[in-house]
Image (tube, rainbow, N blue to C red; front, top):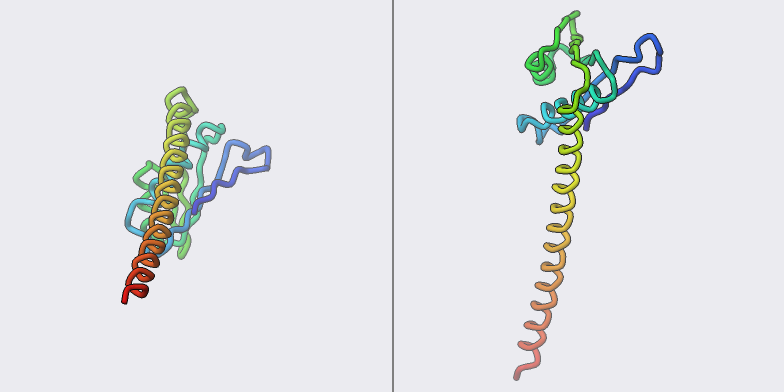
Length: 140
C-alpha cells in the first residue's frame, strides 16, 4: 500500500509526501519501486514539484528507491528524509499515467474474471464428484 499526501498549506502547495508499506512476504519483488514510480508520475501530473520521503534510516529498501530516482537524502540519526525534485508535467507524463491506469484496470479485470472462472470450475468439479459418487452408490 502506498500513500501520496498533498500539502494543504498554500506555502507548500507544490509539495507532497510519499509513503509505502509492503507485506514482509511480498518484499524484494519491486512492488515498492513500482508504487513509487506511479506516485511520482501522478504527483508530477498534479503539479507537485517536490516529493518528500520520510523513513527510518534502517529502511534501506525505501532509501535505495529514493536514491535511484535521484532524490537527495539527508540522514538524521534513526530517521532519514529524501527530497526529489520533480520536473513539470508534460504530454508524455500525462499519457503514461493514463496508459498505466488503463493497463492496471485491464489487469485487475482479467484476474477477477480468471478467479470467477476457477470458482465455476471448482463448483462443476464438485458436482461431477457428487454425480460420480451417487452412481457408484446406486450400483449393486
